[in-house]
Image (cartoon, rainbow, N blue to C red):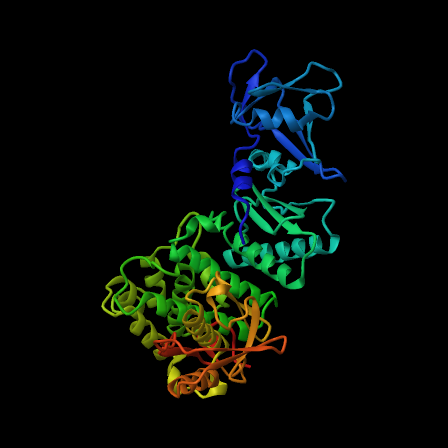
Length: 512
């Protein structure tokens, strides 16, 4: 899930009070008397921020005075007549009715989505937190245009996640960002920092979309304890991303958001993706391919190794891993190895990730087998009905890609569709038979789902006999394609299959 980059940059540069200026214009520090800022949203979506100044302070200087002056001149208006807006500062007017407060309203009727009034509060809220005695209190603001049911769902998920993670860490985070949940006509998004988290929810939103948004929300919440407020900035950091992904899966499991078997499927997919992209060379310090899935895989392995060495009943998975990665003590590979192997320099994790005495792919596979978590299965030996869903999809994609490249020279895009795969090509004229943008659901009359191995074998036999390949489409039509010049390799020679009791072995759930 991504947030409009211009919007994020704009928010970060938005109004921030940097220095409280005394009436005489001298910069003054006011220990114990920070500026208080109270936010509210009007029914039309306008955002109001009331600034309560310490005694003797009449001016607030902007952090980016010149840069954001156009935005303020265009969209900020005094809501109570108590504030005068200048290029680099706001000034409290001398008026008995104003006392120490001036309130500003930001126009809600902007045409550009990235100039929504929520920008006003982005960095300001950091100062609010400095003045807030109850920094651990969760504050969620709702855009009045947002559906109440969606807001309640997000609010409840936030409350549950913060409560559960606070128990796992033994304390709430040092400060909770204020959360703004807003409605948008655009795509969903989110972003945040130590002061504020903004979630944008489209007006037309399905239950599946809501589940994806909640998962994204949990990733952000997990980061509040480790100061990882923007997960995107940690690309390339497999430990940080892996810890977050593992914590989110365990949190979703405990909150009843996803069942245990789906956790197993996601972890199985991550393991196989990591092994395929990383290869069997020893680990060199980072993953050039999928650092998120490799991070998740290695966090799960470390959890399993740690659980296997405990004589007493293990903690829940979330309680076990939460404190590993905090703002005060960020997790690194040596600390993770020490936790996994109980500081044994000859332990499995040390050999795989520190001394690098084990080749990565085969070493990881062997470690999962030794823990009785997974088995390596030869893809060619799998029966047609025993092929995992993730592997079946890869087989189907690899086969269709080879067929279409042979027919058309190039594939523009391939994506999953109900019961099959939707295929698009750049130049339909180059294709003799292929129908563009159709959902392929069968090959030679064999359904793609669930018979991926049968489809592969049938197509291979037909090509050996120099026969055409018939594709069947969801609308009942069909077309014939020639065979590729070179038969494709299967995407995996071996598939790492997690056992049914894998989560028990990882110390995540207890046997029933």
